[in-house]
Image 1 (cartoon, rainbow, N blue to C red):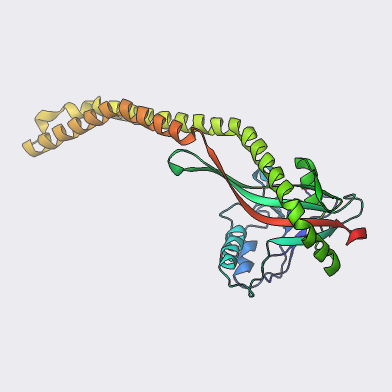
Image 2: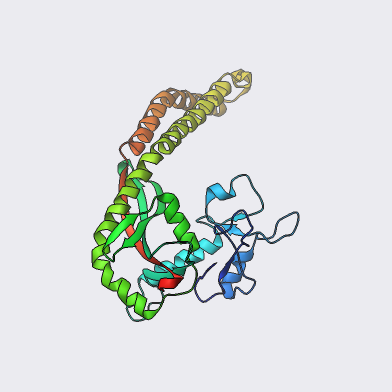
Length: 300
């Protein structure tokens, strides 16, 4: 299996016996132009071996034999730039389509399936974006009109089984005719997936909120200690050795420090209130992105 980006050579999947098969990819040596710089950092700093890239933080956690392609990674950044440009490309000149149909091995699925992908954004208080990710949902097409929903694992397995081989033109036409019957159950499946994902994220959001509050307390408490230490410094007490201008400046500095010290409790309370508001009642926003039809080879 491979991933294709722009007009560049495809990203090659790791071998089938690799523990991250279907989830990690090798960048090709033939990347051209500015894309070639996506290879920076691919080599292991100690062994010099070429490392595959992954797109999931959890897959890269605690290991150095893979490279995480996060949102600021050059590969992802350039791919996103290309995607945004494609959105504004006039009809008839687009090279990117929102619907694709791919074959899968016959053992992967008992019949044709469809998966819809959507961008899920959680928005907190004051319009702050708390989380963003791509989620997928779908199922097996039944009699060309119904949908037997996949669970999360089934959806992932079906997508991972997809190959780069397209289905026949005849099969594409048949899939197009089914769409008006599949659209409603697909929307329902995606809404159910969104609801489940939001429920599973409640604990994560609460942990993030508590961490932000703890970090705020730590910063302001450290500032409080530093000011108190500065005011207690005996060097500041040698006023008789200073001229009038220096004494005036000293008094102004002391007054400013005492005022800042006095403001810290109220500032801490306001900052905590702001964090609580930010995480209170997060609202989901769902944006459909693409549709993938997966067809066993015997039906393609």
